[in-house]
Amino acid sequence: MAKIILCLFLVLLMGAHGAAKTDLSDEVILSELEDFDVEEGDDEAEFFDLPRWGVDRGNKILVNVDSFGAVGDGASDDTKAFVDAWKQACSTPKSVFLVPAGRSYLVNATRFRGPCAGRLRVQIEGTIVAPDDPKNWNFTKNGRIWLGFFYLTGVHFQGGGIIDGSGSKWWAASCKKNKTNPCIAAPTALTIYASSGIKVKGLTIQNGQQMNFVISRSDSIRITGVTVSAPGDSPNTDGIHITESTNVVLQNSKIGTGDDCVSIVNASSNIKMKRIYCGPGHGISIGSLGKDNSVGIVTRVVLDNAFLKGTTNGLRIKTWQGGSGYVRAVRFQNVRMQDVSNPIIIDQFYCDSPKSCQNQTSAIEISEIVYRNVSGTSKSKKAIKFACNDNVPCSHIVLNNINLETSDGTAEVYCNSATGIGYGYIHPSAECLNSDDKKINQKMEAGVDESREEYVVHTEL
Ligand SMILES: *[C@@H]1O[C@H](CO)[C@@H](O)[C@H](O)[C@H]1NC(C)=O
Ligand SMILES: *[C@@H]1O[C@H](CO)[C@@H](O)[C@H](O)[C@H]1NC(C)=O
Ligand SMILES: *[C@@H]1O[C@H](CO)[C@@H](O)[C@H](O)[C@H]1NC(C)=O
Ligand SMILES: *[C@@H]1O[C@H](CO)[C@@H](O)[C@H](O)[C@H]1NC(C)=O
Ligand SMILES: *[C@@H]1O[C@H](CO)[C@@H](O)[C@H](O)[C@H]1NC(C)=O
Ligand SMILES: *[C@@H]1O[C@H](CO)[C@@H](O)[C@H](O)[C@H]1NC(C)=O
Image (cartoon, rainbow, N blue to C red):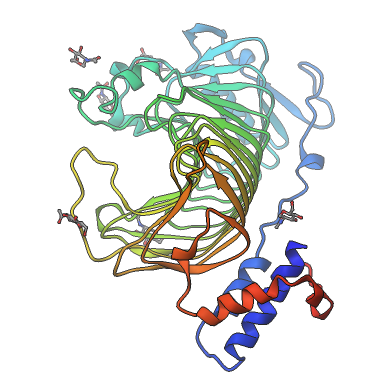
């Protein structure tokens, strides 16, 4: 039904505009938005079953960290064993770097570098824990990376194991926790950097010192069945942070943390998220972008099928004043919210700084954002908020089948400098979004007349 209405909507749009336009018109934009998708991949078949203990089976060569002297008692320093095992596994074709079950391995900041011989599997069954004392962290040497995987191609990470950043002392030392603390950055628990064709399945990443899992400068990444867990009050512990990366699929994952469940930042495109649970946390975010007058570009993002519970934001796009670049072609659909504070929010005045931010005229341009089938309960009155810069309006925002309400029935929509259209059921009603083109809205209303369905071409969207 929604598809049919949408087709009708596109047909009507074309009627409303005529075909002769040379610029990027509504009908072109919207049909492109409907069409684009990111390949999910056949993740099930390609993951590898762990062969029996210690043997070379199915042409896989097990490289067990225990064989390199790892102790796994959670207290002995197993860094060297991991580094040595990695050297072996990385240089041996079809090997499996194995972290066995039932033990806890204490590992210092380490960069596991490729390129490696073909078909490497990283099988994490046990727990890898970080040293917990910030005093022992050498930023000069390690930067902000605890476990970093660099320059890999076609590597699969799998297993039911845990990567634990042991972040509690880092959180206590954060200036967000105690204003007398200096504001210094903390490490990321797991980083995949400059890699491609990577799959990650089944792992748990928890208690990140700061961010839990970062995908940076990478392409073709599939993350399935991952759990991210950190306390709701742990500072800046983003769940999965995607930066300068393309063709990323994140699915069937459960994220609860103290910052964004997912954050997608600069130079990222073709990002697909499917079946995501988020809570606690700050929601699913594009941004922040544009800090310190920087360029921020994010395009082609889809979220399909998500449940957000008790988060401080739901579907969020956040940009700092003074940035440049754009966020374009984003589709959020089939999202349920429960007690979410800002279920739908675009904030072009984002300011995560101890000082208030100066007003600036430039901003990151936000357009072609679709929200479809979004329902549930809002903890704040402004269930839908489009706070856009007066000089750089948000445009081509589409709302379709929205039902958000507060417990006392007072949900409302806030718009500043935002234009777009709504169709289907929309509650709270979003008149403030009305496009300049009143004709489209009238046609839209006519379009929801089911008797006209027979005239619609049924295209798979
Ligand atoms: C790991 O970190 C501890 C504490 O800083 C240090 O004493 C130890 O030498 C490190 N291990 C390696 C292999 O560098
Ligand atoms: C930190 O690492 C750098 C570079 O490896 C080294 O020169 C320095 O001595 C280290 N600092 C400490 C306190 O260990
Ligand atoms: C904040 O840190 C200061 C200095 O370390 C300490 O004296 C104070 O008790 C801390 N405050 C809280 C609320 O933890
Ligand atoms: C954003 O990405 C673009 C393109 O890769 C790059 O030129 C720019 O420097 C990036 N901005 C920031 C803040 O890193
Ligand atoms: C920024 O703009 C807002 C709204 O136009 C205004 O209320 C506020 O005073 C301005 N702040 C500064 C620092 O100029
Ligand atoms: C929106 O929800 C309707 C009714 O539940 C469903 O039929 C339709 O497929 C959904 N739209 C999308 C794009 O999934």
